[in-house]
Length: 376
Image 1 (cartoon, one colour):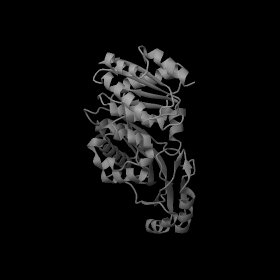
Image 2 (spheres, helix red, strand yellow):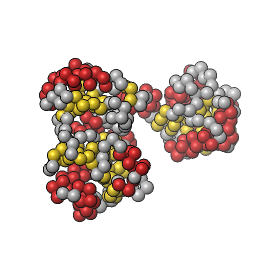
Image 3 (cartoon, helix red, strand yellow):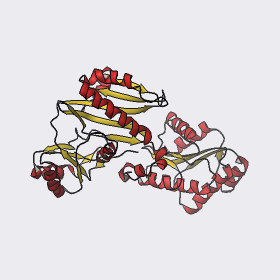
Image 4 (cartoon, one colour):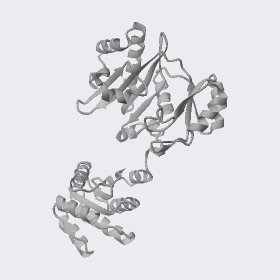
């Protein structure tokens, strides 16, 4: 789950991290009063859940309140990488002497949280990561042991140099780490972490992503969820107990188990098809889930065939079969259905489908090749 910059800054403030004042508006005329309150000269920033807004023209400097209105009007309604800007953040313009980058990310390979820090922050940080990655210092943190403060100071000394700045940066990193762990984040980032005078560092931007699977522990974070991050299909799927992600292909996929779903999509690609979605019906035996899964997939006009791949364990094949029959009775399914049904109660499930005229594949590779051919 992603949140907007203004939401991330509110979280930072809760954790004692230095951020400036801000105002969020949805109408350009609101910028005048906001800018006047913030000192007149402000930066106006599009609030979207994608990167690259600065290069897209979504961040502008306004010299006074009237200019803030003009800049807000120019940004509101912009399309930035497919997202329409419906709100902007205003913040006092800062005199930046130096830009740094500080971020924490989960490294699943090492099972550690990794601090990344560099003295070359700003809009080109992604390019720096590709062209000169050695300039980004990485400091792994063992989650069980926590931060080794002496080692942290050593890393930050190489970047911030002055004792006062090193002390501020170390304090910020520790607060970011606490936020990361306590809120089950997957990314926490300040870019730029700016030197605004000779002695003061401030977070002029903020980015935080969270683990969706941990949101049940954090109702305060879930309240920050932005509907534009999710398609209506994804929202409905979650309500139905389905794990669903939209993709850009034309082969609908209904599978039980995330690992099997990933393997199924890999095979679809291998045999020349393109998956239209990831959809895991989970381990429960509920015919209604299959019905809802088919309904959601058929909303996508690009879908030309549907593959149902079930390897029954906890999931019973006869219940899946009942869900397929229920769907065909309630929905006019105009695309081919290719079914592979193996596992618990497979004999009963296949009999239910055979009675309705469906054939069932034994081998996954055969089913995938068939659905790719059907959808061609």
